[in-house]
Amino acid sequence: MRNEKTIIPFPFFSEEKDGFFKNDGKISFNVDDKISSSEKSFFHQFLEEVGFDLAKDSKNSKSINIKIKSDNKNNSLENKEAYTLEINENEIDICASSVAGIFYALVSLKSLLLSDNEKIDCTFIYDKPEYEWRGFLLDTSRSFYSVEFIKKVLDLCAFHKMNRFHWHLTDDQGWRISIPEYPKLTEIGSKRFANTSPLSPDVGNSCNQERVQFYTDDEIKEIVEYANNRNITIVPEIELPGHSSALLSAYPEFGCKGESYKVENRWGIFEDVLCAGNDKIFDLYNAIFKTVSRLFPGKWIHIGGDECPTSMWEKCPKCQERIKKEGLSSTKQLQPWVTKKMVELVLSYEKTPIAWDEVIDNTEKSPVNKNVIVQSWRGVEGGEKAVKMNHKVIMSPQTLCYLNLKNINSDEEPGRLGFITTKKAYSYTPITSEMSKDCVDSVLGGECTFWSEEMPYSRIVEYMMFPRFCAISESLWLAESKKDFKRFSSNVIEQKKRLSKLDTLFYDGKLD
Image (tube, rainbow, N blue to C red):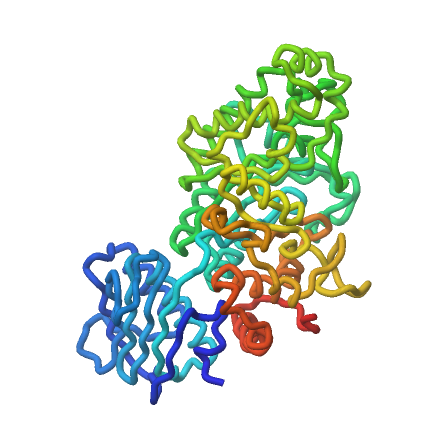
């Protein structure tokens, strides 16, 4: 099969041409003046790392030419991620309206060269995404991963034309970002006893050994820049009001009982949450959002909102007083009230809040601000409800998009909480049959997620991700009418060869 027919995600349109471009010598590299010198330098480095020998002058018989255009050969390039890639015997021409489209053309070129480093079939490709939000969530609280691995994940996201990296930074099992006004968040909140997480070989595997793990400001800035160069926006997630054990271990005064908290080394949902009756939690989160806004230049901050028990609120005098003062009808209405206040803080930093679909529950007294993007994970119903409430939505149903589940239903496979086959993952589509045509534009796209309980080794993360990650990426790039699992099943064979060349592990068993 011709290699352009095996690219994942599959291109919107491709046309075969006779001949091939032989990669056997110096190649001129010509770039539109509209592209900045730093972007030109990055593209030059990218192509050389892929395997092209680029010349400093334009006197060679072969060339790679990059142009910024709003259309090419009657193909609209108004979508900033759209591109055309034309490969002839002596030149490769790339056109797009922005550097994002240029980059994705280079990614497709990388796929072709990984299949055959010596020659590339002549072809014309016109490509563009169906959805603007194509994301991957990595949980670095339950298991902590190195900066080097996060960069590798970003490279793999870019290779599959995924443009959002949802970085889950805080949870019961660890606080991973430094907040200057509240230094104990990392001094205490990033530590936990290691009986659920293996240690480095020189330390051993003692249950009594504490691990201190968080990302410094410089490391975060490095990762943000690395992502930006690859057309990826990082979306930081700071959990609230639940999943707060690590925070409360550092600052117990923000919990209902005010003492006896610990950074959890167990998995699950815990009843210790932020005290909704304590106004000082908003000072705390104002400082947190201030730092997060400074370190992450993207438009969005995710504020969590999932799995928040109310048992502590029900017996907390401050929380019960809050219910009376705010005229709420039940304890369950405290979370929407807290969310409303937190959303106001996020908006004050000119960021758009994102929250899990629980935030649209019990909102009779505290309606959710229409600027909040709702991420649907408890199936698709949350997203269907949210679009009817005029919210933008991101669809991440756990039954299709959770890559920490097993690849198949087998005791021999790693994973937990069930299984999702590659075929089932490929059946995912952000738009459901229950969404009316009027609501479709509110669906931004989707994310696949990796929750890291029992997954401390990054190589195992890779194995769990692929090839289901490939399936989700194609489901977010193509319209449903253009998807074809039989074609995908064939193409993923070639994609696995490419992943091997990229030193990436993958599950290599049956797909259904």
